[in-house]
Image 1 (cartoon, rainbow, N blue to C red):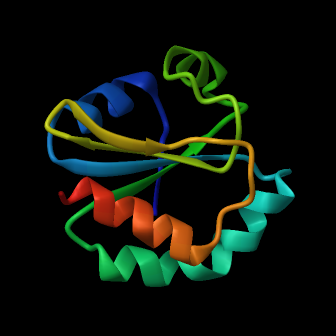
Image 2 (tube, rainbow, N blue to C red):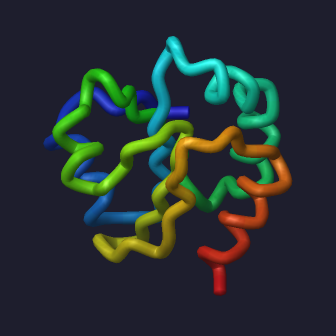
Length: 105
């Protein structure tokens, strides 16, 4: 998973290609629960670039995108938002996979 380093990088990624941005934080226990399944999800959906967005480092971006709970996911393709799975609730592998499948339709 790529770690977002700057707003310029976010804007560039969002505008070109297929990306799933995962909003998270090191201190978030619900985020750590899904860590072990993320490599499998990334491998299954390798046509997407998965990008880790540190909620604390990019709080203004979270506000701009209405991401007020973590872990949360937003999919983009060529500048267009495909969908979002944004809430404060713990996510399961099945829920994340189901979300990604909705992006394909």
